[in-house]
Image (tube, rainbow, N blue to C red; front, top):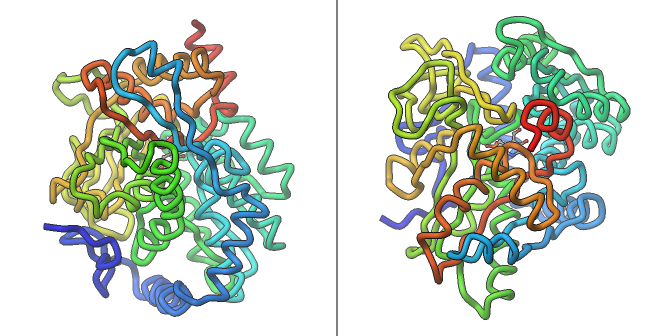
Length: 404
Ligand SMILES: Cc1ncc(COP(=O)(O)O)c(C=O)c1O
């Protein structure tokens, strides 16, 4: 079956059996309003032109593709190309959806952003978007993440955002998300709640995929231009919830002969080992079909939808949920999921830094690690990897804990 991105989701926000919207009536009504508004403006010329202007003159798009020649030569197999989302203003792909979300919020008459963040990249991106559009901004961050990603906390504060450190639970993204949603529920009439990945109740997964699709559109053209009109054999992205993966994959999903591969976090586990709950964040591999956080998808959750503990060295992957479209693409066999553990990601972090002079985010290092692992056995092929963010936020943590 050919997958046509524009045919999804259906009118109720479903991708097969995944997605939808499962909220209390008041919130359901608000998300319905957001959906109606978004479906009206998503193809509107004025909205698209405003977004194009922002992308070019504020974000610094298009971001380039870099051929990682030194790394590829060292591995001696496939040629590795990097889509450089780390070169987006604020240092990650998250700004692609952040600016678009804030533009929608502004047009809806909202004056305040309430959001949560794990690695801090979505928080920094929303802080920049709020400053750009003159909106108030509250960002919730778990205590563990706030300590680990301290540079991003400072960046948000400098841009005028109020950072609320959440001490509940394990002090991670899932706890920050619960606190931010509770705050949003109390004040939703004037607030917008931009979820930081391609997940959540409809229409959020669609909005984020649409806003991120610029990554795939650019990458396809750029790759052809660099390689005499060829396309990559494999397209690889890391998956936390799915925003950078859906952005890149959406540009290649309708091609028949390209393998789309998602790397997810195996944390402290070893490949092939029996599952150890709380030691990984590999939701597509170990998750079950659940209703969690207002939508249906694969999740590391109990039958009643309460989340189970997750873990990854990369805060942005340390989350028990998966975007509904990716869950559906897995079911259809259109996207293959592989696992990468902490050690492999840290090794890739150093390898890229030392061969190419590019320090990747720990999240992106998972995609890179998968490419590094596969490259030697695929000579003659080319891999396109989404380098979703830069590693400045991770430097202190890596040097302290994994000095090489
Ligand atoms: C640089 C970077 N890459 C990837 C991710 C994972 O998120 P997603 O799967 O939504 O792209 C994050 C999340 O914080 C991130 O900061």
